[in-house]
Image (cartoon, rainbow, N blue to C red; front, side, top):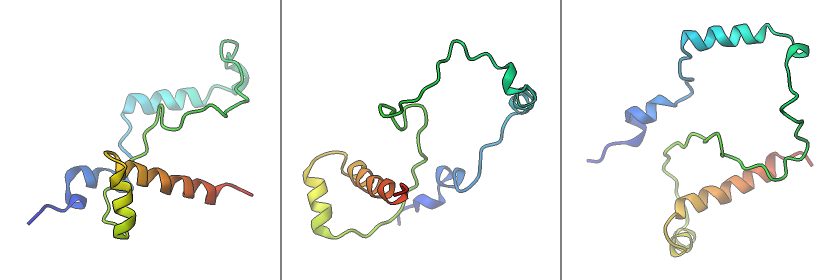
Length: 105
């Protein structure tokens, strides 16, 4: 009998819970929140207006969740024929559809 992925320690870690923030970071965050924006020096950080070349996931990785999904066999075969990484390609197709659906028209 195989082990269910959802019952693994890694699977339990990310289920709707945020990791605890250490006390030192919490205090530093509170201290910085008290400083007014007018006192923040942004001279060495120019305002970014063009985000067209921004790369999603460069500094942040979306948490992946293992799921069981039923896909038509011909569709799955087509993705597998393209070689290694077929699951990532399926995810990319779903993400593109998702982004088109959530963008305001």
